[in-house]
Image (cartoon, rainbow, N blue to C red; front, side, top):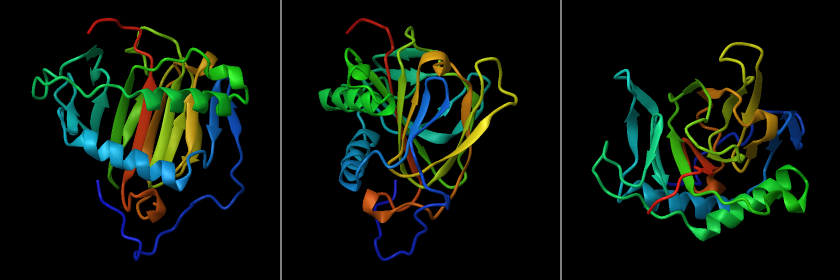
Amino acid sequence: MKRAAPATPVLFSTDPQPRLRAEIAPGAVHVPGWLTPEQQRELVEACRRWAAGPVPMRHTRLPNGGVMSVQTVCVGWHWRPYAYSRTAEDVNGARVAEFPGWMTELGRRALAAAYEDPAAGEGYAPDTALINFYDGAAKMGMHQDKDERSDAPVVSLSIGDTCVFRLGTTVGRTRPWTDIQLASGDLFVLGGPSRFAYHGVPRVHPGTADPASGLAGGRLNITMRVTGLTGV
């Protein structure tokens, strides 16, 4: 992940329209600019620490032999396709970093903001976060977040370059879908009827990162989830 270079000119937004909170589909809510620049910088520094280990950030290998173009590091539980575990047997066998309490509070505040209801975050107890880093060429195909044994909302935070986020239906990967610009500091929640909607990232817009975020290039996406799993 590149460090900020304030002297480099950047385009802070690819969307000329006012960016307002919007419910894209039932339970799927976009809150632009939810994170302050200071909060973004703090998250970037935390992600840099996690990316260094104990389980380092890496390109995940898929069951078909392919390799994901995004790089991933996890906290709380280690994710690999179709499974969670406490140790990363597919990487180096180490136990992943603990899920921090401050991130639980952040997730609860995020739900309250997304659903405009202070009670919406009560009882929300995320126990894992998948942190994906996209360079300018990385993409994410249409998929469902369904490896969890819980239908609790997924809280997604974006930092760095703006991306196109594609939200489909719960039926399949094909149309209809809606494309949304997710910029640095944006919050997106998948919950309720849209919890298992197909979604993906067909492209990232290089050069759109705000240096104030602490990330001069590329995109970080932090997704908090409730695994529904137990065990130490």
